[in-house]
Length: 123
Image (tube, rainbow, N blue to C red):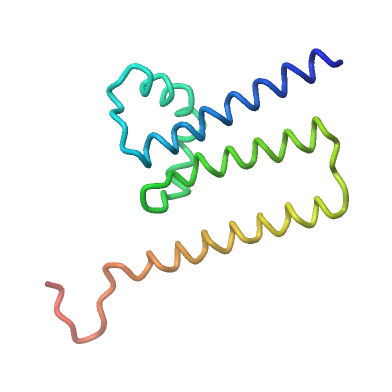
């Protein structure tokens, strides 16, 4: 069981590091034609690609990658360290409510773009 725990922990940590590396590379505007950058994108794209349609980036920061890295860290803590307590459940629920609220505010903020008041011309 220790071997399985070690392998699972290592895989989650490595993938989390690659996700955070992707965030850092986008923030630093690294050259994505570099083979190493291509490797990072190819490893993370299957999960991040669909999420980027739902979760838009916040400025230069890739929020989808940060969210997946956070979720993986929480899953690792719950599964490997068995820290599932009532307080942990409340904390996770609070974070999810906060993320939902941020997403809703983002959606409502972008809904007004392109909207014209009555009497205004379209151009």
